[in-house]
Image 1 (cartoon, rainbow, N blue to C red):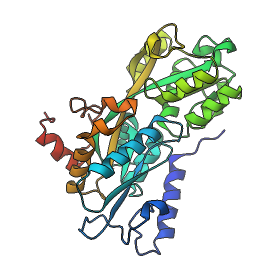
Image 2: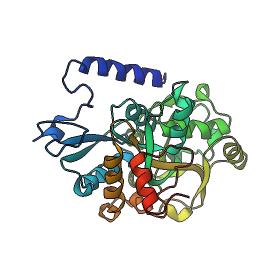
Image 3: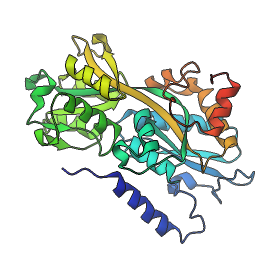
Length: 344
């Protein structure tokens, strides 16, 4: 299966902007009709009589971003102290798409892994020479761990044994796919060595449950509810990264070693070596001004107790700057960080 390039995404966004240029609100991203109910105007200026309606890009419906992003939007709507403020969460293909769309002023907020955010600034990795830098770091969300699952009765005991099999690597150009390919390549497996499926983790879990793929992989929270739910439907195992492959990954990439302990899931009998990164919140430096950015960060991070998702436990004041190294800070977020003594 061919991958969808970021250039295709960018061209599609450009076409959308051209088509919407005929509207009076051409500089405002489209919002779902249900999110516009009761609104006469959408404006980023923040005037008292106008609605400030923005969008938060999350991920695929089966992943952690989507569920957590919905809760984050609800908390912001409840606690951001700006007249007319409203944020709606939208499903996307996660990190790379969110970065591109925030930079292109098609989304105002986005959830992303910190690694592609760093790559976007230099036009590297999935960004293929195109620089995307009109965004700023607004806070840490949670640690993400690559988890590679197989059916327990498939007789697959190691990653090299996946050669010639069918593997769901994640959505095209997603951080899940990048992490999966990083793990597979460290074990000598490249695209021609297996059959590639490129679906979100929710669909992928169904494929593995039904026996339509041999392995699925995703960059997920730990523990991941989607993994737990899958294990209730079919006996599964998580494959561990081989020591030499892990050493190679740590030396040559920005991923870090994460140990999935045996008590992390009911079905595990031993620890699993994996890799991980950091999920962070980014915001447009064009569509979100300093004052609005400040109120968004304050409203969200000072009310984390309203979030029920397991991964929200990581969104503490002590950890708020995790994943920010090397990234530009959104001016509003920077003001909040400075006021709370979080900057060196």
